[in-house]
Image 1 (cartoon, rainbow, N blue to C red):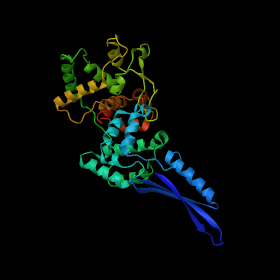
Image 2 (cartoon, rainbow, N blue to C red):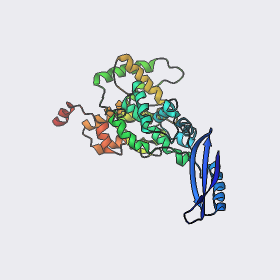
Image 3 (tube, one colour):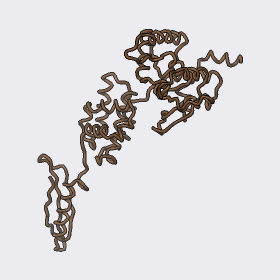
Image 4 (cartoon, one colour):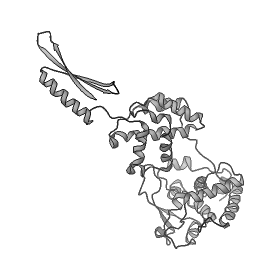
Length: 356
């Protein structure tokens, strides 16, 4: 509740001034003070009435703040924000709602609060790269607080906190993956996936795991991209296809690219049933889950479905394709990322190229 009082003060020359003092209380505690001095009492009284009205209507009054848990909920409930949020970011935001840090007011967050949160997460087994997502996505939500919800959030604290968290080893970037499947592992996977796809499916959908495996390697596509390919986007004459909404950190939607279907990938595509709009009308999670089960049953360690994308790109480099040509297949705009992250050449393959 806001209120004001007028204080009469004598000047050295014998005149008087009038100070209007504004006080805001919440639960019998003063949470805000301000004052302004006028030469006439009526001016001070007019200011006091106006200022109290502004504060109580929250238009130009005290900065509005809420617990971070409430801010996270507001972010989730805003479909314009949530619908454009990726799966990993969604998971982290929902997880943060149940953490101790979510109890802090949006404009009261301190570096020490972030340090404590990171220590708790690390003690629970989270690695620095995982904890970095917590901090990064919390900052992203807080940056939306004022422009979207008219909520004050202390985002400036991250400029101080991030270097400190890195120095303490609490957050960090993930190590660059270099894993490629060996030929022996690929043969075992093919055998295991063939058995799995021939088993009686749960329902009427039988997933062609073998075709999707080979197609993924040959095209270097993400499994989500494979399962969104449309018959209408296939150019049979040029053996190309439009890959819709390809992942790009600078552009979330509409990033369509024409990709070549090299080698047997074109034949794999056209032999699929064409009674649906999609060439591979399957849930990408079901495909990767089937792959993971077969991989685990075979005892193959530290191999992810996404590593097939690196396998495909590395094969193209080993066959003599330039980095610009490989980027046409993988869809990379940044050639440095393509070279550093998606390339892991087998040294012995260089002999083959030298002999050619």
